[in-house]
Image 1 (tube, rainbow, N blue to C red):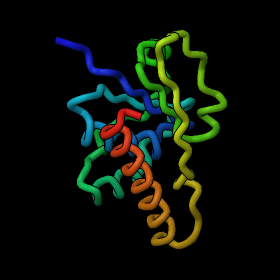
Image 2: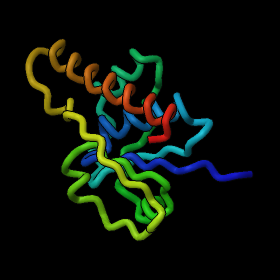
Image 3: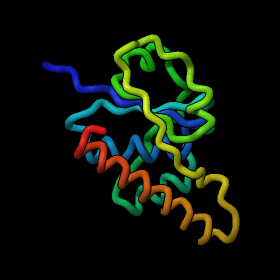
Length: 141
């Protein structure tokens, strides 16, 4: 059986953006890609990220917040950073065949205001990530 290309989403804490991206790519392209996510640190799964993904019909509540695994990093076909900090501090990738991209999204965990305003920021980031994942699945880039 042919191996599916591995996509590794990276963020600072692996709590929001990378989890959302992993959830969408599993849902929209899981037949074409193996999908994992991790962070420079593991901050735990953000409950608001779980909530907005549930609103989109995707359950990420069983995902774990993981620290970058060098073995996975170096067998990945695509390494995609979702925040500037992860992009700047991503460990060295020794695999010369990896495609590394940076897709920057605002951190919804830093949103302030009322609960509704914060949730709207989470939804906006979720929708932006979904649009980017849809483009990736359709075009492969």
